[in-house]
Image (cartoon, rainbow, N blue to C red; front, side, top):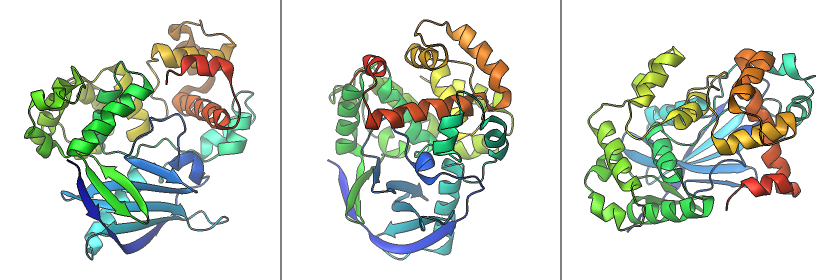
Length: 324
């Protein structure tokens, strides 16, 4: 059963992101998988961040409507050290690309016919991921070959059995299990949760973290996109699509677009050409020519803007592609 921890407010730190910056565009992605690992409510983000083997509750907010500062309130069972505060601050800055430099993109493409409106609405939006590398791979594993509804069911079952429920600021979110804890779980027990072949993938990936075959710290220290890509592809069960997401969202390479899934390909094709049938090869070639070193960031702006609009209006062709 899930472990429950009641946490109390211990500290608040502030970060000043590079400009331009969009708080909501950066901290809430309507196209992302909905899970109990992250809660965005009333302009604030609630999640867990693990440091030193311990899970802390984190509440992230804009310090004021006119301020560019980001506040990070940390919740824990007891007082925390300055080193813990700094480690959590670094994780937030890294995961949400708060030190990224996208000013050149905004200036160059604010007049682009496809980007003008998304930039006007979300100028300063960053690529971001709420999870650690391990957490991202767990989510990606559950997402494989499943509808959103089925994925939510599987992740909820896993979190209830192996996650850590954190209660803070009147909210509940889960911290994902650690690779060390998952190492103690049998594949049979995982399969009993009706997650199918994903049980084997979860076990193999967890083992690679426990044995240090995979190190997020080491990957973050690499500077060449190709080196990171090759290292990620060596992880069991990780394919081109997951690597593409990671290179952009977690490692913040703004040009990380050399693969499109069939589902995304149809949506991008519709956005760029007004049809769902343009080949991924042509899309990738045209996007490279039009946006070059910013190509994935450009697609991100167009894609997220579409899903923000979906919250306010019905877009029939998009609903056909979203399997709930």
